[in-house]
Length: 292
Image 1 (cartoon, rainbow, N blue to C red):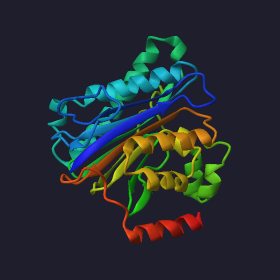
Image 2: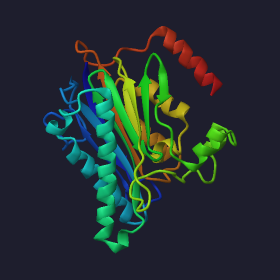
Image 3: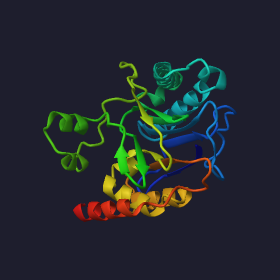
């Protein structure tokens, strides 16, 4: 399979600075981090491809520092030599736990040298596509979805948040969680001086025509999943258009927060774009929209 990546961030309409950050690397074998998109679909290298999104918190500048420190720490961990040591699924999961813990320690160390940064932290979510598997690790409420034109949109992560705990206990519904006044309270993150990082790590099989979406809550906190899916249905053939329309969706919904979106589209080697949605999928999509 071959892959194309793209990412975008925006300050939004209400914030004075952007505390969101991202990084993408289409080919970890050569560590080509310094780009925001790939010009075309390229082979998934022997070390895989990766996307990272972080949403900083802690007030002006502190949150911005935390998200960038986390991103830079993770980038340093994903060297070809280091990746080569982890050869099976369990070892890769163990590696990701160490990567997140290292990022957490990097933020704590940054606080030691800057008293004004006390209390800063960040969420983080990463998606490492390696062969026909995706390895997803996260702390906080930044999310990872997978979309397929013939299967629709699926949320892969579960928010580490107060309202998600209420949902899990059956105290409120998913719809009530979306509009809950305390839906910005997270229960896990990076940078807490007293609590160790405790990321969740999952795997997901990768199929042709899958698109993986990472985002901060500047998108998923303002836009319902069905609205995100509707944009994807219309734009999945063009990755750059897709991310711009998702950004517009968030801004049109109020743009009250910083917005960060990273996308990875995977297709067959002999293709130059994703397959067109099947007729059966179009019918299912039509009725799904009616229900929403």
